[in-house]
Length: 191
Image (tube, rainbow, N blue to C red):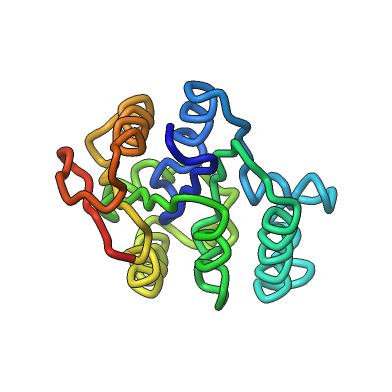
């Protein structure tokens, strides 16, 4: 790959962690997930941070992790981020400084299917399927304009994680990052 760091953003269930792990292994990079880094640093789960200190505190911790990565000039990393990391002002710019930002995206129905047995996400943890669908729809709608600011967007609904990783590898080996020659399922942003 041409770029030292790859940053994956996108809604919950879009595949950031599974794709990120595969991409890191295939490209000889280290994989980090911002949620796991926070959990390791603080000795509690993301859900516990939300319950004990609230979302605003959690978002401050996320921003601190990005500051640390930038200050220490982390290299050769694939970074999977929490779905809401982009809501904090300035975080998208921090991510862009870290590397090429790729948004993984899928329709709500696909995200719901992938998340149906996942109860670890604090903003989606309460209620039945209908309320989870409504909450996920609201989250994606509120964040979509930020997701669209990524350098690239890859639709993951009909691709296995290995295939998404392969698309990213192919994409980043292109000689000109601003090229608009699209591979199937990839949208190019001027972001």
